[in-house]
Amino acid sequence: MTNSKFDFNLIVIGAGYGGFDAAKHAAEKGLKVAIIESGDMGGTCVNRGCVPSKALLAASGKVREIANYEHLSKFGIHTSPIRFERSKISDHANNLVINIRENLTKTLTRSGVEIIRGIGRIEGHQKVAVRDKNGIDKTFSCENIIIATGSSPFVPRGITLDNKTVFTSDQAIKLEWLPRWIAIIGSGYIGLEFADIYTALGCEVTMIEALENIMPTFDPDITKIAKKSLLSSRDIETKSNVFATKITPGCPVNIELTNAKSKEIQEVLEVDAVLVATGRSPNSKDLNLESLEIKTNKGFIQIDDNMRVLSDGKVIPNLWAVGDVTGKLMLAHTAAAQGTIAVENICGHERTIDYKTIPAATFTHPEISSVGLSESEAKASSESENFSLGIVKSYFKANSKALAELGRGWFA
Image (cartoon, rainbow, N blue to C red):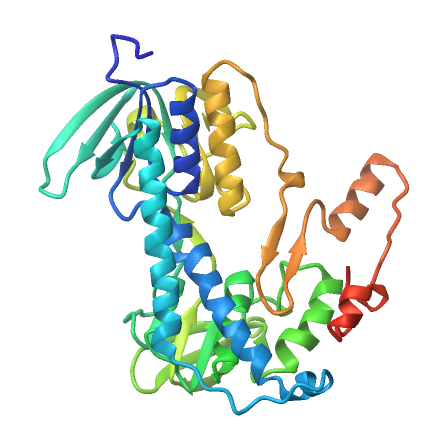
């Protein structure tokens, strides 16, 4: 029930998966809840991330599988030259987004959550202001606030976007055209997934990484196998230890590559398109955090394991944050778990989160998944805490299901 002093028990700013799960869980707990969203319901994951990209990966994966004549012939299967319609693949992703977005919105409404359209910001202790599309402000009071504003693609200096020939994943998921030759800046999971999509659909890819090695955030054993199966076996050229210091849109797109060590221009590439996949930045600058004297770390809101907002290590009362804006594991299911945990703590049931138990996946073909510490982290922990560490490796070449599908012996 609502405390008569407040308009709501809880206001959630942002309707991505973190905000959605928090609002829904709070309503189920009997709280009066409002959720504020200025864009499309569902946030990045539903509209510009997980959902449409997985739809594109599913469709392009079918194309790759059917086009692999040599592999299929081992089963005695012979196919005609494959044809596909780019627009229908794009429509498949867009229709899935619309369907999930509508279902998510209906779920919140049925749960009793009030959806407020506009740009939300902190207006002081236990107060939230919302600016609607007409520029009109309205202020609401609430017992607790959860910030779930997510993140946006990070674009380094020197890179100019035109959202046609030079773009981020926000535009790439629309699949409006298929460039003959595309450069992908960054070799994290976003870059790898789109390299998988583009090569399956007939594009040539050059992957550019600023760090010394391609796929720097992945386990070295995984990287070694992935380089063979996901990169070198496909129309993918890789360049590491170079910065894309200047990218100019056009036809062609010009990419100035600078050597990471010498800081000298190494070469200039001319390609048809560039996808910038260099990570993500928190959406926190317009939240008016200074009204509560909250200091961020490069824009990321600091939290404890209960999801309470911290500033200089001190808890800010009645203020919580979840999802990408906290800079923890920037995954949709992490945000969802954080949202639920925040509400549990608001309701007086102390809950914490263990990030080591949260799995991550890259939906390439084949897929890459991980959970817990990396091998290097585990070794460091064993040395600092003085315990013995065992390492076990297993291969799918001993797995009957993998053999039945004529797999190549990936790690299990």
